[in-house]
Figure 1 (cartoon, rainbow, N blue to C red):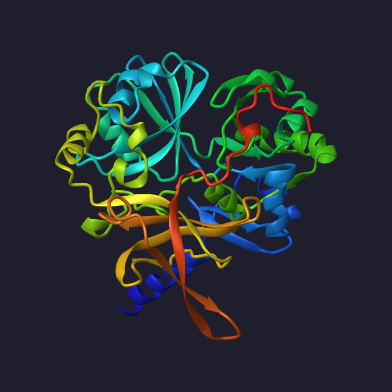
Figure 2 (cartoon, rainbow, N blue to C red):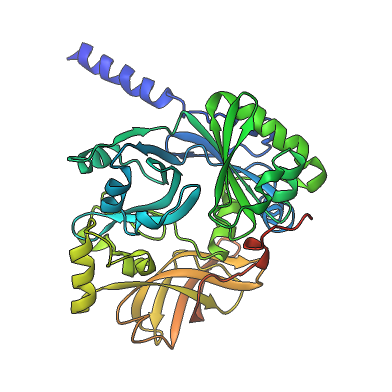
Length: 407
């Protein structure tokens, strides 16, 4: 018994001491880090912030921000049946996705509950890359039964960077990637870098002008250095997730297991969500061939059995309301704020909230948010008025301007 206990204790210690994985760009991030505020993203070490979160946020909105997206889960899906397989798997019609285009999509289980959302890149006629938040390889492989398709995870093999902000194109042009000038939102292209190719797409998670770059892991640092050198004259700054999170809330974007619980991650039966319950109803294409969850989604619409709704809120005052309860007429609990910030650019107190119908659908007025503000070791309870407003909370013309301006 003593030996078994000792071995178990040593195993536990080894597990605790096992370091988080370092991304291909970690050496550059660590050199810039002054805060030592790291978190775990898909098993990797990622920064909440590197220097000043406020300056990092304003780099997104004023100059150019560089964010390491390497931990994002990436699957390469190729083969004669790749299009048909992905059309069966996801909500949107993949047949309409042209080569060198990207679309945002989601996928569900057979009950119509969302498993995850992400971006689908069409790199060739029969070659795709699926990027998402959670790992799904066993489910993807099981779903491939009967299809002639090859599926492999390439998360660690492919490094990714998000370059976002009004001077992001200027940085790319200075780095020798000026050919991206004609890319429209959700276009992608492949350009040479060193002795390999880099895939550059006009995509991002900030609601701003921006690009995402994917390169083989072995050439990650040379790509970083190429962008960093070119960006010196354009205000480039490396950022962490805290700044990105502010920008994505302004853009009205949702995060899996933040604004909704994924179907395979939910422990309670009432926590799962259908696309229509998290604002993704526009992704569902009922006219395409059968796809996972189709019957359940359409039945819920037809029978009006949807239970939840995701809404944008504008809240009086300037105290962020993240995870605050939402009430109707100050007394009936209506839901919860999943994400909330004071928007530095929009100058509004904004939030994304999950409400239980009929609140947010039938009853849209007289909503209140219960905020507890910690002031000098004492919580102060405040009831603040809230109103439902459209998302995104912030619209920037430069996000879709083609060609983008040089700033």
